[in-house]
Image (tube, rainbow, N blue to C red; front, side, top):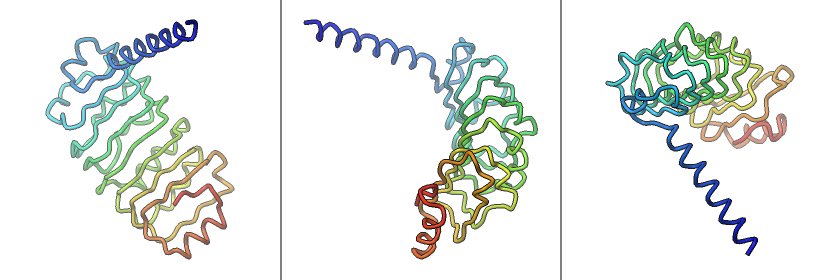
Length: 208
């Protein structure tokens, strides 16, 4: 009987928690604007038309933002006014460089830059190198044939995702990447002999 009561309590607790989390996540800017200070997660994929005129400063507690697959030629400068933002997904757009004020996102921990065929990676690396709090970077399916020379300035990263690119060669200054836990390199153009060599040199740090 006691076990049944405990089980019922946990089901009730997690059910309430789940509903609470659901209420903090929005997929419509019109709904989110009703109580912007309560919005923790905002997914505006496919809502390009609704981005104009958003007062991003109102979303002062926003932790997750997705502007994926909108084919934006310019990322809104206003998103740099989100003081609590931890995760940003701006994959599938057409911009070349991040907003100049991007370093204002002082709590950003994870950034998705997947499916970006026009991105100037080298220029953006110079900007991202100033964001020492960033831990996880996704640069997947960007048709990268090589990494820019300045890429390893991001020596504070813990995880790097480079899956689904066109990399044939890979080398990095392991001694400078003290925080790095893994680099994901699935579905590139490495020969089996290259994978064996890299695995022998870097061990489980590389994921193929």
